[in-house]
Amino acid sequence: MPRTIEQQIKTTYLALRVGAAAIAFIFPLLLWGGGKVAGFTLRDSMSAYYWATPVQPCPCGENPDHSCMKKGSEVDLALTPSPREKTLEPGTMRNWFVGVLFAIGTLLYINQGHSLKENLALTLAGLLAVGIAVFPMSWDCYHHSFSPHGFCAVSFFLCIAFVSAICSRDTLVLIKDPKVRANYQKAYIGLAVAMIASPIAAYVFNFITSQRSPVFWAELFGIYAFAAYWCVKTKEMSGPDIKRIVGEKHEQAVI
Image 1 (cartoon, one colour):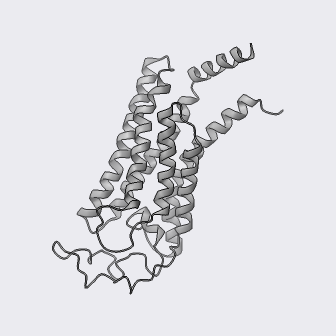
Image 2 (image 1 turned 90 degrees about the horizontal axis):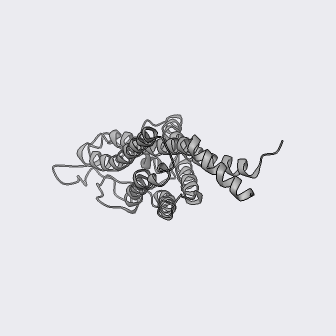
Image 3 (image 1 turned 90 degrees about the vertical axis):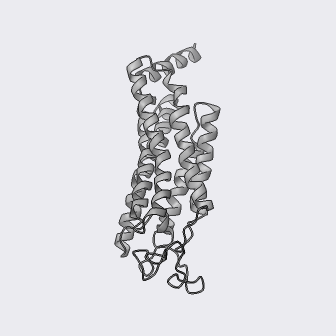
């Protein structure tokens, strides 16, 4: 028996949200596992998988502990490979890194928000996700206080945090039970805080430690908060109050 138009629209809408969450959950594991299969261990950050290869898993070359990063307060240029000595080969996981970010960006771009501000925030987040891939991290041993890549990454999480903390109120008012509404509100605020804290922590870890694997975990924390948001939002939009309102509007339209 074929689906009704309403069932098809609802199923497609939920699939977009679940798809965004699933891709985000898989993304860090895909990079980590793919790199391990290729022959190198966990990288300093997810962005490093754009460049990393088994031959050169780290821009520091023979200094995988990043001992070439600083000498006192200055970068030790004697230990840092010069641009002419480096050949930037395509990273082993580059295609996966770029492809997943484009997929997430596309899903966010086509996902329509409940309000104009949510729709604009989702559209901007989608463009920023693509920007993270289009503007890769610098592949060297320098600490860069600003880069287009970093700007896109931080702005992406800020957009989604805005959607989680602010725009979620537009649909929460439809929930009758105050306890259920309050629980959702707490969840959204907590996820927004996690998404803001993640890029901040990654930025700080990048400067305070030479062993930068904490950067990877900070990024993973933010991405999983992003994925959790879509799971919670999908559950909220599948609740009995939302279904009742949609059903009533459908009956009015038929009449």
